[in-house]
Length: 172
Image 1: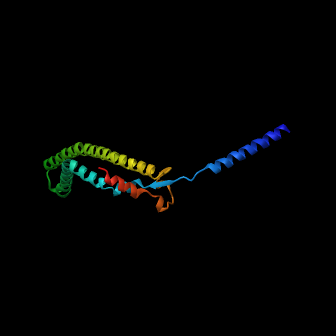
Image 2: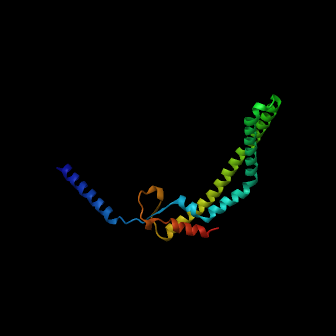
Image 3: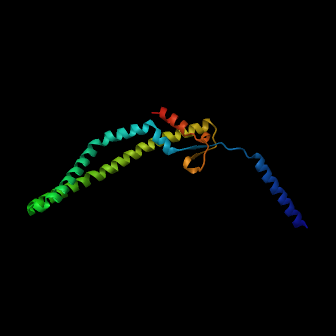
């Protein structure tokens, strides 16, 4: 009998707690941002691309010239190989090998340096985007901001991407 009474009391107590929790629950304000869209639309993105192009244009031109020279020599060997003597073939092949080594010595570090600088600039930009999202969330009292890819369906009024673009566009 005592066990039944205790069980009923515990059940009533749990039901009361659930009702209190439901009654005190508040509506959450949720926003979404499309970070990829934001980065693509920012004027800083174009500026970064142009500065990287300028920074690396000399090295890129050098690698592209080597690519053209290698392709030219490969085509020459293919086209004229049957009429070349052994010495001419060996000389051309040695030149192509030298060009390939130079290409590898230039292209790999260029690619690594370019990716590193691109990552550095992207991290700076993402810092600005994060700061803007935090600022808008605080100013407009959002409880939660999600990346747009997290939502299957989103009403346009919950998307704060344009506000983030506007704020980050003003930043230097």
